[in-house]
Image (cartoon, rainbow, N blue to C red; front, side, top):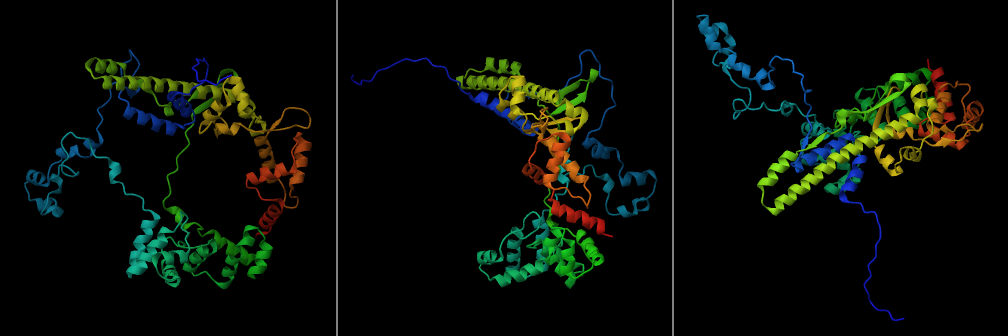
Length: 499
């Protein structure tokens, strides 16, 4: 049979992800902060989009309110009603210096504005945030001191390089030989400059290790004696809570060692953390769960974090009638389609979050009523099958989302845990509930009876029928930053023996 080229027509079905569909899927996994930033960008780009502003209910008259003064009227415009020093003195039939001695040669009360020139009548007041002093950074704080301590330009250049090598905690992250090679000098010169700048505020900066940082602070307090130096050289024993071995290495009795440790606790091992700190942002829940009537749970979305947009079709119709350019009409059509898609996608996103949160609350009713010990094992597949969605959709919806419950504020991912089999053949146990029980057992143990991982596994199997291996207990314990039984025994014995 000869091979010849030919044309064939075939019909086939395939699933194609359009850019709009891909964008809708991406919106599901955005947090409310990321979503609001995305919507703000769309509002700037699309002239047919506008935010939905709250309006009073129809038929309800708004109560009359006293006129409120704006920030400008309250702080600036009231100066028009203040009399000058000269007019006040004329009213009293005397000289200005007799009424306001400090105003001789000037008339500060006659000022009509405290803002820079160019500020017109009736304009907007300047943003007060522009006049708030900026928080100094660690590098700026140190550079100011370095300019006062060091006089030679070469030393200042080396100090600038040392400042650039500091990390957020204030420790010197770069090697002195690398800094010396970069600047074309010898390491001894860099070491000499380092010793000079180590006295800068905050005390302890430019240290290379934790013992050196603590030594600088103790030297500043004149408390770096030989015994304290030996203590700093054996901080590994302190980390292992081997107080007996630490006392022998330092050559101090238990009472002196306790006093020295108390001095160490007053020091700051991270002196640079007071600078360049980002403000703490509170977590805002996306969903609220409250007790409803009849013992049911009421699940509602947090409307404050949901962006509300409207499509201005009146503006679209007005502009479309007046334009004759094909490019402009195509642009308006594209903006209308994008605006409709965004409004629909935001509504679908809200409905999907509510549906997933409702199913989580339904399956974790025991946790909401009785606490973490009754947290049930739950997977993405279980929720996806219950609400007839794909697992990937549930995964995206629960990412970066928080739910507020009577038990506290939790990330939605918190409720998805693996299952541990029960020895009695009953319901499986949640891994998070097992972690909670392990922490309870360790917190209740006595110094004379420290529980090993094997003992904890046997207790879980005997008391609650949880089939868990020793290595699983060790993994959960390490995940909760709980030390081993050997270190816990040293810690608790040290606490009971400390006067």
